Length: 455
Image 1 (cartoon, one colour):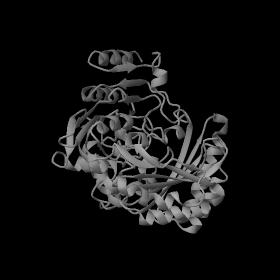
Image 2: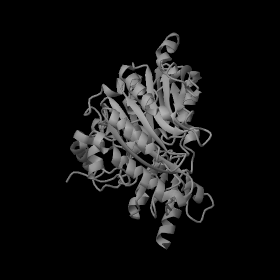
Image 3: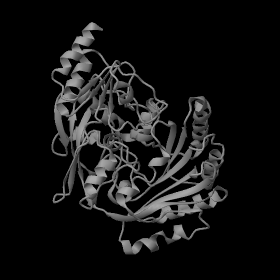
Image 4: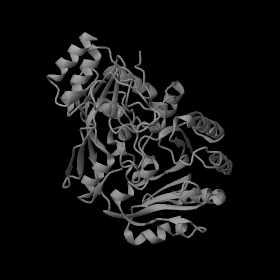
């Protein structure tokens, strides 16, 4: 341990950020991630200020045989942003965004949150596909795919990447793009944190807003079958201008169960009313917040539903169809949810995100259909067993209806086996393993949905 302590002291002499040990008062808060179910204790937290800090931290971890976890926004439900007894490379101090409105690009540092990113880009009336929770990190969401309001019109977040700066397992700092290290750039677009620590992201931007049309509309849950059937029909007809999701959830009063839809419309403002009329005129909604809204604010409307520190356990799978039998199963499982904070979320995949070939990037989920997620969420540890069991049982009940693919960003801590890898990456697994062997042959970055190096 004395050797470790002297190593930390030496590292601190060339480190621009902060190094936190368990004895430091800031360590306790810094080790926490969004999911309160995750309670890990790193031996050292390296709060980096740039690529050089990250490189020094990677080399330090390798010298002292420490497992490496990388924290951007800390939202990963599986808790992969932290580690017991290892090194957390914490990018949370790196929240810089530079917008070039003439070239319509933005470069964001690795710890940037989507709320920060949207604020800077919307100052110029620009945006790119980003997370629907404003406190989600740009890095983790993008490297694993990037579901967001704009994905039918502008693709996944990763589809808008122009280049990244990445620290490799040997401490080298490289830029990856279609011109430089194109194999690495292909792998990073969907391969998560398997290949290195990304210190900055360059995104292409699009004219969006600043005012768009969107919000949430909800009906009593006793009409859920009709609501979800209507949602299915709307999704089948949706244009690239419209993002749709549905959810069975409990309302703001903590008691009233609802069948709800969330929508964002990004076409001409004069066309919004007619585009959304089939949704707004359906049945007798008890909640309807759909209307003109700043794009940045649209990206915050779900924040309160996923509070930091709540205990989360998720199960998710992609369904190419949403059959009547699947709808009935979803409703039945939701009605047995033990917590008022638990949801079943159904995201429509259509438009630009589905017009990319599954092998064009590492991200293989390119089909039209519905990502169905059982989002178990609760507050106290005494309820752990019941809420985890509900998610697992619900996921098992959905198995007759699922397809081959799963969305890697929604995989929980126990979704890390070969089956999960195949479901996440499909035809890309072998190519990813070869690229992993080239850039991280010792599997230094393995606290993820791990891609083992190809022998």
